[in-house]
Image (cartoon, rainbow, N blue to C red; front, side):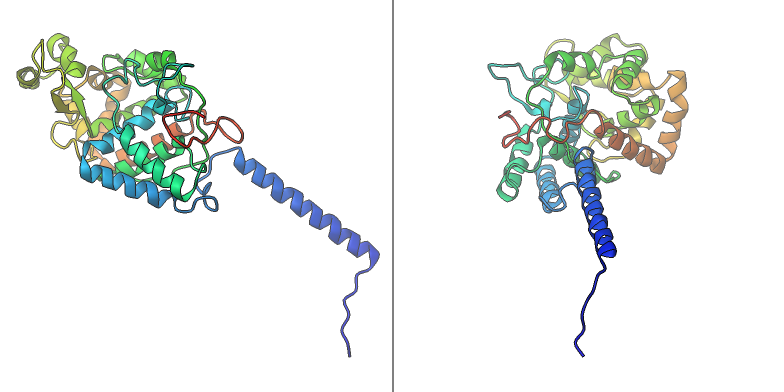
Length: 329
């Protein structure tokens, strides 16, 4: 006996209405996802993105260990100026002056060439899909992890800015000479808490600083270990040797650990802004906790990085996806 499928008119109408509602709900969810960051943003459009960035970061660190700290720093300095939008990567042009020559960035930020290499590889596989802002966010995480630190899920979906803001870079990026009041203000202005300030400052457990950056501390700052001060003065005289490098973490500047906080306890923070975090009352218990508990520091640092990555991203149709991270189309 032949089988037949049969819908009564009312039930068929109900089916159609339900199907339309499902479609509307599905499209609305897609639209909503496009208007917020998500960890699976490139799941379909560029599934190789995480592998490509990770491989580029590992290669760069193998070539020069400092690249890890430099990539992490690029993400910090990007997010503190108009949000995480890749503006820090833009070169000067006839329309605007980029942020690279701002006081906290000039002769300080590095690894732009590493970003260029990774972006070129992404463009070969997924042209005009992955933003430079997202590249920085992923590279920062991978740098920390490859140097022995924690990992976290990076939320993605940022778009790139069409311009830069050198004025904001000079105002909002924390300076090596900042006191605790200024540091708190800088972090609060982008929605980061006092605890975020203390935990994210732990990024200085990796990387190096030039003599010009820490010279004011070793000749004018009284809140410093005498032996540490004398040691640094032998490397960094009052005049000359501007490019002499010193590890931000005295013992392990190429390994992401909690020795940065232990240095602060003995007044051996390299930068004035570092030492300001200790002996500032409210921060002291957090610094001592991080110096004793590596896992606690790792957890809070990862939380802080996720929170920082959420600062004012460009989403949906805002901004653009750059082909070259140095140039806005």
